[in-house]
Every structure is written in C-alpha cells, then in structure tokens.
Amino acid sequence: MGKLMFHGQSCVEIVAADGTRLLIDPFLTDNPQADVDRGHFHDRLDYLLLTHGHYDHVADAWPLLEETNPTLIASFEIVAYAQEVLGYDKTHPMHIGGGYEFPFGRVKLTPALHGGQVAGKGAEGYTTVPAGLLIDLDGCGIYHAGDTALITDMALLEGQVDVALLPIGDNFTMGPEDAARAVDLIKPRVVIPIHFNTWPLIEQDPESFRARVEPRAEVVVLEPGDTYEF
Ligand code: NI
Ligand code: MN
Image 1 (cartoon, helix red, strand yellow):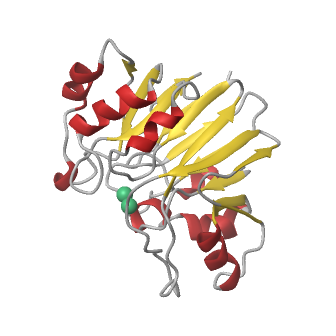
Image 2 (cartoon, protein in one colour):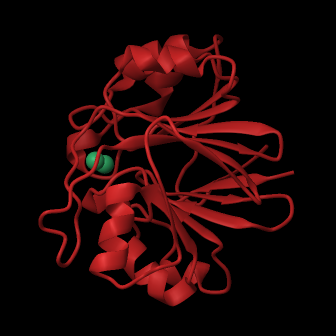
Image 3 (tube, rainbow, N blue to C red):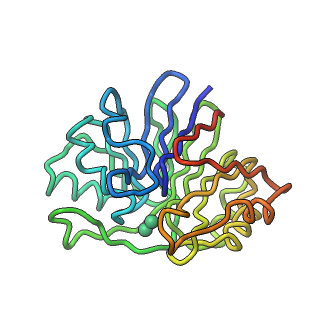
C-alpha cells in the first residue's frame, strides 16, 4: 500500500509500498501552512518532481537537490536551469505528452494552462510550459494537476485517474466551480483539493467544494500533515 502526504499549497509527498520516496512541488520554508521543513526529507528522497517553475512550487526544490540528492523529474527547461545554473546533473528531463517508465512506476507530463516563469537565483531567461503529472504507482493512477485553468484536455485523462489532486484556490488557478467541472471531465474515484488557504487571496471552503462534487467522486480533504493511503 502506498501513501500520500499533503504538506500545504501543492506540495505532496508520496511513499510507495517499497519505500521509494517522491516529493512534488516543495514549498515549505516560506509557506505559512507547511507542516514540515526540509529536514523532514533529509533521511531519504529518491525523486523530486516539479509541475512548473513558480516560487510556490520550487522554493525549497533547489536546496533539497543539494541536501538530499534526488533524481529531478521536470520539464526540459527546468532541468536545463538545474544543470546549467545550479550544476545539478542527476536529472530526468521530460515534456508535455511524454511518459517514461521509472523503477517506481510511470510518469507522464500532461497539459496545464498557466504561467511559465522559473523562480530561482540566475533563472532569468528560463521559462517553461507548465505541466500536470500523471503518476502510475502501486496500481494507482495519481493525477497532480499542478497550477492550471479548467481545460477540455482533461477529458483525455478519463479512465486513467484514481486519485486527482486539483487546485481549488481560484485567482491563480481553477476555483471550486471549475475544479468541480474538471472532476466531470476526469472522472476520478477520489479528489483531493490543493492550492488553497495558503494566503487570504486563495481562501476557499473545501466543504463547499465537496458539496459540488459528491457523490460523483469522493472528496478527501487533507490538512497539511494529513496522510491518504491508496
Ligand atoms: Ni503557478
Ligand atoms: Mn501556484
């Protein structure tokens, strides 16, 4: 059985049944909602995955590369920044529409409609196309949407997603209404809302999102620090 831990904003930790530890979009130090700091990952981090380059998704990624030596899985441009500017070579570049079979399972980068700036020291000139992540691990299809608008492309994910992590914060991403429409396109079994309540600008009531979605899918609301087993 694998488990998934929510650490606030879009940061999700996944531990596979065999102990392989993955981390998506680490934003911990400057995140008022984060339940852990980078030290939580110092004993082991195998893979670090990034959906896009915005500060609230990568702020702790760059120091974690040095501190934990994971394989960085991200778009070609983000990997280029890590290699060329940070001098970090343990990387696996990918891009939208492409999938790859890793030892822990398959990862595919999916379309997301959002901004492309990369945040980091020396990242001027680096931009990328934001992505979502479709991760097939321990027999479970996990979709981390990253930051995105509602897009009809999400309908192509139907049949592949058991657990969908969808932003509901509004303003920068889908709000609850559009995220509920995304559920209708993707048809997952379980939805976990992310990217809300980190700041007043993206305050949302996850219970009203639940009311919009259930019973078409089960909504699991995780507080930072909560775990979902799959
Ligand atoms: Ni963003
Ligand atoms: Mn964001």
